[in-house]
Amino acid sequence: MTGMAYPPADTDAVARAAARLAAALDEGRPVPPVRDLLGEHDVAAAYAVQRELTRRRLAAGAVVVGRKIGLTSPAVQRQLGVDQPDFGVLFADMDVSGLPEVPSGRLLQPKAEAEIAFVLREDLADGDLDPVRIRAAVDHAVAALEIVDSRVADWDIRLTDTVADNASSGLFVLAERRLTLDEFEPREATMRLYADDVLVSEGNGAACLGDPLNALAWLARTAREFGEPLRAGQVVLSGALGPMVPAPPGTRVRAEISSLGEVTAAFSEKGDT
Image 1: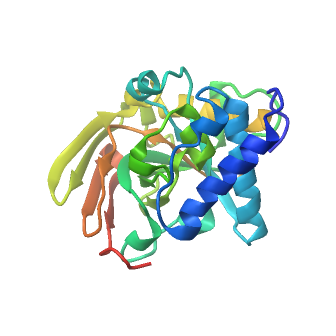
Image 2 (image 1 turned 30 degrees about the vertical axis):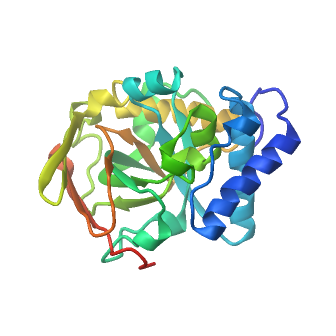
């Protein structure tokens, strides 16, 4: 990803932060935050770390299938001292929709949140990215569970920690039911999230930047500025509709998102991959 008008980052700090986060994946254990290397507000350096880790995954054969948007909740933005979202990259092997269980062994500190996922029908690479264009670019929406994870020990994160760590991405599950935006209005969505049949989180479309399509518009502009615009066929996880909840091994999570219906995930016992 290139093209964003940020000052150059400290290449040594970026390399050390990338190595630390990569070690968490290689060794299967969380690591200390990377803000001691990057500072708490150097977004350029944090995205440089994300790009380096993405480069390594692509070199190992990974395939990009979309993006995720994080920090769409005003409360979370206040907690981290920021005034805009962040984004991470979705890879094909993160989509566990077709598996009978979510492989807990691939995760370190998983939490679940319910979201609206958009699948694009056209590129968002050129021209105006106004609301009409954004809406027209969506082929359909589906209910989704994002399984967020942090390579940073105890979720002790600030802005640069989560951006560097691919926006705390883990895995994701997409429901089968698909609705066009003629059939479904994202900002009017209501959400209930259950863990083992206990209601643990509630929210609505307005919790995601006022409208999940606002989040998609932000991402479309930002991705284009980074030189990696959104493309037809890609999946965009638009941001949480309510608070995320822990999802330890053995948990069964179910979300209901108004007319999009249900999306479920059963987490395997620890050790299954």
